[in-house]
Structures are given as C-alpha cells and as structure tokens.
Image 1 (cartoon, rainbow, N blue to C red):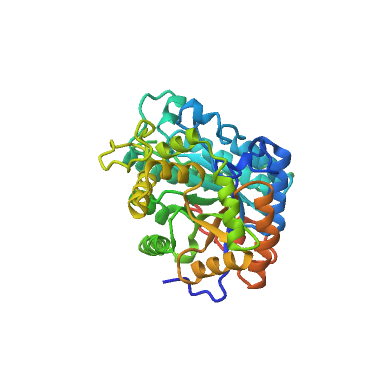
Image 2: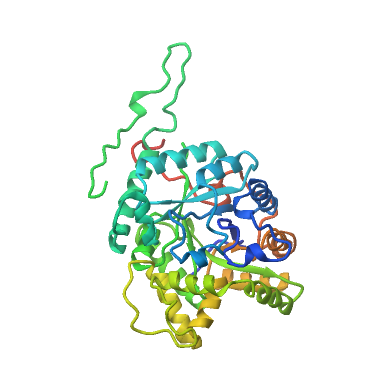
Length: 435
C-alpha cells in the first residue's frame, strides 16, 4: 500500500558526512582530498544542494574513529570531520531553506544536552533542524566516555525510546505563547505556560524533525513510534518494499498517519553519459581502495576481525557473536551467500561501497527512482555521492533537471522549514493543548 496523495514527488536528502561513503572518493582524479574538513568546500556543497532544492543536508557522526587497524585507518578520509552542531550552525548562516540534519547518540549523550542543542539549531536556522536518533553501534565508542563495555543492543534501544520521550518533553516545556515580553509591566514570560518535566524513568516553538536509522526489530518499532524520516539501507527494491510495508504498517498500529513518516533509503548515485560510462567511473573508483582498508571495512560490517582468514576462501558460517550492528552483519552474510563471494571479493565490495547504487544516464536513473516511488519501495532517497565535487554536480546539474522534467521532484521550495519540505505537521504540545 502506498500513499493515496496524487502526483507524489520524491524527497531527496544528501548524505554529507563523510562527503562520500566510498573509501576511494578522496583519491579520485579532480576530487577534493580534504573535503570532509574544509568549510569552504562544504558550504559550497550545501549551497549547490539548496539550489537544486534538496530537502536536507544530512550529517552522520561517529563517537570514535572507525574500529580498524591503523594501517587501514590511515587510508580513510573519515578520520577527520567537524563536530555536527558547530558545522550545521555555521551552514545555517550561509543557507536559507535546505534542512540541516545531524546524528546525536542516545547511548552516550544526555537528553538535556541533545534537546538544547537541537532546539538552538532549529531556532538559528528558522525551523530547519532534524535529529537523527542513533544508539551507536561501534563498541569502541564506550571507551571515549569512560566505560569498559558497550551497552547491549536491546538495552540501547530501551534507553533510546525513553531518551526520545525526555527530549521531546523538554521541547514542550514552554507553550509557544509563553514569552509575552511585556515592556510596560516588566513581565518577560508567563509562569503558567512553563511545564517542569520532572521525568523519572529506568534510564534517565521549535520542534526539530525526528530521523531514525535502525533496521533491526527494535529499530523498526522505535521508528514507527517516534520517527518522521527513516534513513535505511535495503539492498534492492524487493527488500525495500518489504521494509517499507513493515514500517508503514507499524506506523498505523501506533496510531499515526502513514504519510507522516518518510522512508528514504541510502543510494550511491553515479551519473554518466550511459550506463557503461557510469560503470567505468565506478570501476575506477573501486580501484582506488587499498586492500588494507577493504578488509577492515568488511570486519567492521561483520563486527568481527576477519583479516587473518584466507582471502580466497568463503565466509565461515560460525563467526563469533557480536554486540555491533545486527543489520549490517546480516547484510554481509546474505550478500556472501547470494553471490557466492569470497572474503577478498566481499572486502572489495565493502571497502568501496556495498549498498544500493543507481548507475547510468540521467534518464536511466530517473526511471529507477520513479519505479521505487510508484511501487511503494520508498518516499525518496538519501543520496550519496561517489566523489566531490564532480559526483555531486552531476546529480544536481543533470539528474535533478530530468526528475523535474518528469514532475518527480520540486522546482522550488513550497516553504522555508524542513517540516514544510517534508509535508509534516508540527507535533501537538504534550502539556499545553492548542499551544
């Protein structure tokens, strides 16, 4: 079942931290090697995306360097990046309408800090902030916060659900009309319009958009109950349809409207003059991935080190259990069995980019995107770029006009806030009816 709204259009966000998910991106001829940590470049990317009318600039975050050997880590362009709120606050001053989304962990942060930072970004940007709720899958992150052990998967999601309640409760602490600022009487705000949350649990006017990125069973349920945008990574259209139907069904069971949650799978987009041209670009890009980095990326995806195994053997079925991302590991195992890939072949795939990819001419890619939208596989996409700036410019200058020609994507923003871009209502205040 898809939304009943006629003439549906795609929603497109841009995954911009790292600026490309492909490990070889920084080495591609003509690319900016320092793009992840150069504000001049990043601000130009954001402005280019805004000119193309993208819904949002999406910035992921890591609380530790990737858990891979130093020999591999030294080849990764993800090792340096800006702190999300510092960067997005700066970008809010050089953009006007594009949404600004950032990751904040519910495992290694405090609800008050998250609530305050996102409320501040939302006000600074004029209603363009979005919070990507993550539970932090990298076990190494725990050490940066003084913990010897990483919190168990089920416990992380239990904490995340309560964390969401506290953060959104804090956002509703003041009614929208609480600040009367009466110069004559000297009364700045009305105490009757202030609610003290006084939360006690097992763990602990703006209303930023809520983004969620987990695909596990508890992740899907958390999304259905709390999220307004889901960032996900299905491998193909069939998997996407199943995920879409499942999460949208859960949304309805949670008493919410299906159209109030947008599902935007991540997709690497490589635009060429033809499919063959785009494939040649990808082959060149993949060739720039060093094997040390490739095998470490595979180990991260599995949650267990496989660098000691024979590269030309098949992936063992009795790998040790892990407390990392279950969705990521299941994806590797499924791909290995489906295509009969050796560890070397898997490493090459994961060392570059192993997720969903659209390669071809603007018309060919538009055909695929249109099929996904019309067949109930997605509400749009979280676009990732193969290299910067060329890969981004090929999307904004060639693919976007083709989508607009087909009336599949907006030619201009209908409003100035991220909620208006996504067609999302502002949630009712929990404590002040009609506020």
